[in-house]
Length: 431
Ligand code: SDX
Image (cartoon, rainbow, N blue to C red):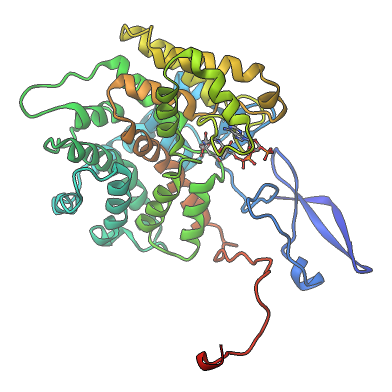
């Protein structure tokens, strides 16, 4: 972090203090308020963190006005086109594009950690078959701290590295097995001869009764979806992982906390909610009714897959996802997919509507992803687990960055208290 040459003056009740203004490598400067309470006896108030930087990070940067997303400085559209998910994992974890030898070593390490402890199968079997796969993923990820004791010491750099590789390697197996369990099919073990995305698809859709051929077009689309979801600054689930990690909880418990936060329909659960909304709309002629509901202050309905806290222009991931939807559905021969038609018409109408223009609401990453995932063969209940699978590397990279921050401390926000002031207990006989 670079100390800016200027300060911000804050005057309250006749007392003025100078607060340092800090600059990063790009993006808004920040006012360092760490000494505010000790100097002025007041807190800042920002419940949704709309104007608050919770940390310093070097991993991902979003320019919401330009609609730009950079992973370690590389634009998401270039990575989606030229890279692949494990290379992006390496980039997010270590900060630079790997050499061929580094990538081969990283790929081998991940490939050889994809199996789960055999006992974990019994953990799956404790769930009802109709449990939401996110409930299973959240439970099993948390349970990993009961199986991999040799990588839970957060103060040991080697154990942090092993836990990171284990999380990235095993989350596809956990998600695939959650799906298999929900459809009553036997678990399919990972295969070391398949690439990361193909292995996930094979574990999801292969059955012991016959060989399963992974379509390379589908595998490429799956890998691209993983890249687009890998990291995204201090979103709700990543902030959850950081806060959990600040107490020095083990990495598996922290990632389970991230899974739980991502599940919400306002966050990673929006991809499932969006496809269910598109299905409910059903046909293009019913779009105006839903646009009206989204604009109605008295109606809690929102257009799922629309809007974003940071992007006040298009979400660059949605652009790539839209192109990918056209490509994948075209290659699968389902161009006249009614859901895709409704999505495109809904986007067109919304982007011409004054309400959405004034509030700068654009399609986000969740708007088109479900259409591709459904075309690949996943039920809507698997959409958010796939988001969690892809985001695991971002959570782990951000968790490692926080743990390795020499200035790190436990996160402990304060509050504006508006409850009852001190009063004495009243015996029940006197009430
Ligand atoms: C993800 O943070 C991240 O980076 C998240 C994510 C990531 O990769 O980690 O990008 C992934 O979570 C994407 C977002 C997925 N969620 C949805 O698609 C759900 C629908 N979207 C909204 O719930 C909303 O847009 C949020 C939650 C995404 C953003 O909410 P904000 O920033 O808190 O904005 P807001 O709720 O204050 O809305 C501002 C205004 C409001 O109107 P006013 O009160 O000012 O009159 O815009 C309106 C809202 O009513 N609005 C919408 C809307 N989104 C916002 N109106 C209709 N439909 C919508 N989708």
